[in-house]
Length: 111
Image (cartoon, rainbow, N blue to C red; front, side, top):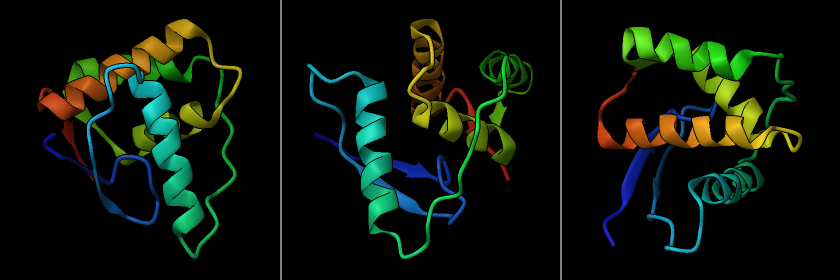
């Protein structure tokens, strides 16, 4: 499997992490949660406590659709969403589509 390089996607610590692609039976969402937990438990700094605002996922999706770029604020929103256990299945699918767009190069990551 070819590795995927995820740069600045979910961390305020400006980590560059090389991850392998998820197995066939794993969803991108579950794979992302596992890697976030791995990253946060291996860093010497505690991850910030984040809360997801209502409607934040829809706002991020609309913003990215307009600009074709994912800002640092958007990445913090995605981090909060991925760590939120009560997120709806529709929001999970939206996040999966957005992350696939980043991996495929359709959406650029900006500062």
